[in-house]
Image (cartoon, rainbow, N blue to C red; front, side, top):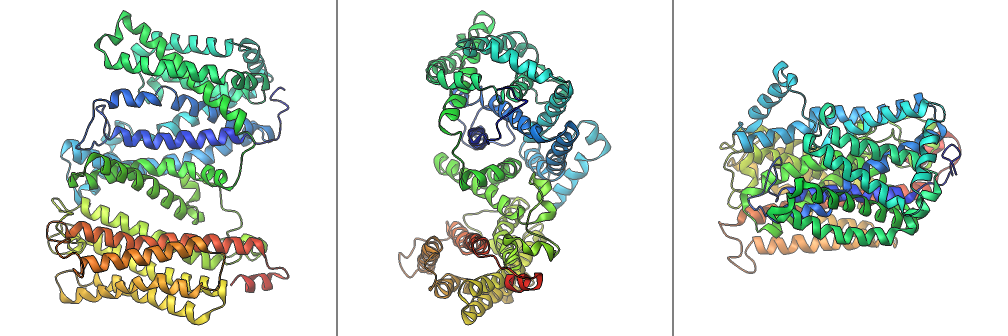
Length: 615
């Protein structure tokens, strides 16, 4: 079937492959922290075997992403004109690129400059770095885009492909030629020969620079993959052959991978001008891609669902956020000299959970959704749009915005602590308390004190959301009021403590914040009549037990000596992470429940009635 008359069915397999490839990208970047190749920051642990390990995904991952991205662009063209597609690409790609280059990437570059060039730390050091980067001399050297180079290339390749598409019949002719030329076993052999040829003829001269105007090997590889993906959408004979040869391709890749690793490991791997190495590289590259596309087409074409929908929307914000979070996490965790396995696990969890937390926050703030590559929010009006209140998802929208503050508060607190540690040279996480980040010995106490002050206010606001959410779900006014009061008092204690930095005795007003330990029990009490919240109830119970255990250990009620001067800081970090972090998870689960309730039983009647039902 020619792509000019495509099937309207969505290709869920391509969505799964895209999500999986970006997930592998995050794992790959965590791996580079331990590699011997140049990267932004490294762990104290590096491993020579990472040279071979990265070959598991390195040859094919980005090529596959460009192919799938080209196919996604093709689906956009079925109901749009070239002008509309170009505008949609601009709106989706340019705001995140500009935002990332100005906000996200400079954080990475500054940490790298501190690590490798001794650039000053602290707020003054960061301000000086920003002034340097965006000065005339800094801009003359180019604006670093780091991992956002992929967006630059997708934008450029989209322009090229749209121009080709505008030529009447050209894409159909290219697709037809590919369908005919790649029939049968040629689906494997011809692309492998092409990949080997460019690896031999172009790679030795140009390498991979990720600089758009001087990256000709990469363009021969990635632009070709992009146009290929664009052209084969709807060419079912190609997809049938991918399914047909998926096992053969998997076998070829399984044979090629260890050979390729051996060629990298052995000093003679580049013998005969590197031609054998290029041949094995090209074989592994295309065989793996065909295997993934073939198995995906065979088993995932019609497997959609809420998990895929969630991950598909989350992928772009995760891609934007993950590397900044990872680089900052390495910079903060590295001084602890954790064992390599524990450190790697910590980096993975922080990067993935931090990136998902960013997504959960930004998707709820309509004004910044485009900066993170998200479409404008539908059914979530802000400011209040009475007409939009007829949309089911608009019910409880004010409560849900208050809960969104609760999701954002732990993320803000984590970011503030990380920034304050970075601005405090020599800060010892093992022996020093977090309060010292805002004390007289800190170089920039305003970072910690100001951030915690704002986080305390956010906690109080979130508590009102918790109380209103409990009332909406159970109609228990007293329980909702008590829950809100506990959060407001805890937030007030946090904020007030920053006005009297340690060691001022008045700083101990922060003990009010410890009242939030009762909040899980109060929420369980308030939600006791709801039988449809098992996950939330299990989570709240577990959190309360964990906080109780940490309390009795840190207060030396049991296991005396476990907490001592040499490790008290880490115990405090663990306590603070649980004490603050659970609020974001609970707020998210309640937000999901309110959304389900709104969609399941939307209010009818007039706009005024809908508005009243919503609040």
